[in-house]
Amino acid sequence: MNQKKKKISFKQWIPFYIMGLPGLIYLFINNYLPLAGLQIAFKNFSYSKGMWASPWCGLKNFKFLFRTADAWIMIRNTLLYNIFWIILGAVLGVTAAILINEVVGKLKKKFYMTAILLPYLMSMVVIAYLVYAYLSPTSGLFTKALERWTGSAPAFYQETKWWPFILTFVNQWRQIGFGMILYMSTILGIDPSLYEAATLDGATRWQQHKKITIPLMIPTIVMLFILSLGQIFRSDFGLFYQVPMNQGSLYSVTQTIDTYVYRALLKTNDVGMSSAASFVQSVVGFIFIVGANKVVSRLDENSKLF
Amino acid sequence: MVKTNKGWNISANIVMVLLSFLALAPFVLLIIASLTDENVAMTYGYSYFPQKWSISAYQYIANQSARLGRAYLMTIIVTAVGTSVGVMITALLGYMLSNKDLPGRGLLNLYVVFTMLFNGGLVPTYIMYVKTFAIKNTIFGLIVPNLLCSAFLVMLVRNYFENSIPRDLYEAARIDGASEFQTFFRVALPLSTPILATIGLMMGLAYWNDWQNGLYYLSDQSANLKTIQNILNDINTNIAYLASNSNASGVNVASLPTQTARMAIAVVGILPILVIYPFFQKYFAKGITMGAVKG
Image (cartoon, each protein chain N blue to C red):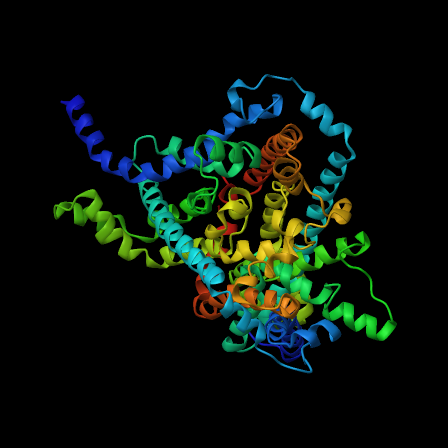
């Protein structure tokens, strides 16, 4: 009797499994099958032999990779940009969120939000065009203006010294709307009676933000900070590839793990080095994400990823 | 916030106006640059106040309508197909996972979430798609890799089905004799338009903006598959791109508006986003708040 009931109840679930199947199959193909390809990092890969038939070569690919200066440059660039941008992004996002909450008038608020979020919706190719409009050597707004005023203008797409600043500016310009909206939702969740009480006690607005708003935002800030630390080995391929226009002379400040993997795989046809770099990124990235999630779940059970 | 504060309101407005200006100014320059006379752009550079206006860049686009029109059509096809298939399989998977009693639910959840934590990276993915599935230089190369379904959006839909639709409604439909598929299409889907609109917009935007799949999976042999974003990328990597193909239309290469035409193509590429976005801004904002705060 019991057995029969179980069978029937399992049967009733079959339609649900069928519904989930297309998505599950897609994730299997797109995300699980490539995992078998991680072995390429330990092989002497050739396209003609394919993944399975290519001979093993132990750690040779990694040895070659870490003997090059490229390896350290791309890891340094990936980590430094990420760390700096995570901190700067949090500061700017929180500040913008607090300020937009002080704006009176629904329509004004909506306009500001719409405008400031717009860059976030653009592809990196288009953003590269926007940057080019200012910095182009032939007709950029800044280049030509500098030429007229000072007689000469820097060759922005040739000189590395500008790019840490340009990339930082572009990145924050694109992200600030995102951060603002994110932190705004936290501020909106703060109990208004706290501010009422503070006002009655004669606290200034500045003191209210310092003693109420920011302390109550700390959990969200910390959470997002840790979650982005989990992504610290990944970089925005488009930003580092498109915005500097793929200029070789700028690699020392624009090369990250993702751009290196792409260039080695499709431009210089060095599958060995590329797969080694890609392998390191996947594994170290995984360790960082799991670690970050562990910390988050200890701080706040509800915010963890899994 | 309870009471408004005059001083703060004024300074906040000043900062917000500045930020809005910074956000919008490059787009204004892009549009004006596309409407500038080519010689003026070459001599004086792009400017907010060009000495001479011209629509020759757009005439160039019209002349190139075979190539650019085709790219535009490809963008539309890829976006429409990718988004509709993607939303469907994402919604179905999210619906399945939203059943608390589903046998094996925990395992299936882990199966989906794991894809957010670990991935094989570009090299294995590229080699698999090219060698095993032979999608290089096919339209599938633009639609299938990475964009069709993401664990993140599946989780958003699952949470919505789980928390925002009363389970009694499904029960009622079942008692009325509806099959599970009918329940999904007639009850669950119509009630979930806010979340479907949000993930649909996010996916549509991702497809419209995508140039990476084209960069990886299209080579020069498949010029007729390129989307607008791929064309913009080609112009960046190869300045001669605008001049190629122009002999056919009888244009003098020297008089090609290369500096302004590239801007005009970019304007055409972002125009739909600029037009649609203000009306759907709240869905984008919603997607952001839902997403990053809770995975």
